[in-house]
Length: 131
Image (cartoon, rainbow, N blue to C red):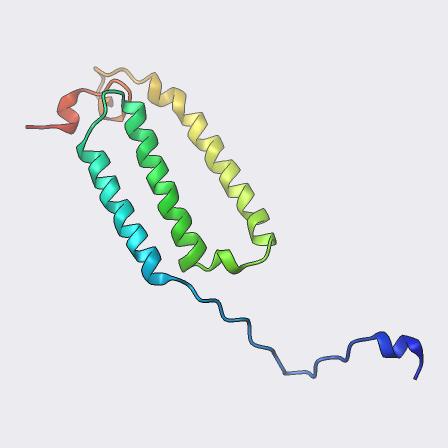
């Protein structure tokens, strides 16, 4: 045998596969976290802050945390390679472009118009509390 043939790894036989390593996922813990975050979401919806931007940012923060928990653990993205995170960058950039492109439309909506329910920053209190 030559030195070159000794350094090569033996080939895996055809039709043979090795099982993936088993990852222990704390499903019950993630379930409790999602329940607590859902309770926080309901509390934020019931207790309105004077500034509507705070309400929107809190709702987006809680939704982002919940989405990350679902994607990382239930979709097993936490245990994937680095390429999956690189592929995640493009949709996130497109989402940010869409959100920031729609902000002027939301801010400039006239509260007295027929689309007043879309106006987040100066919405009439009757929209949220019809009592």
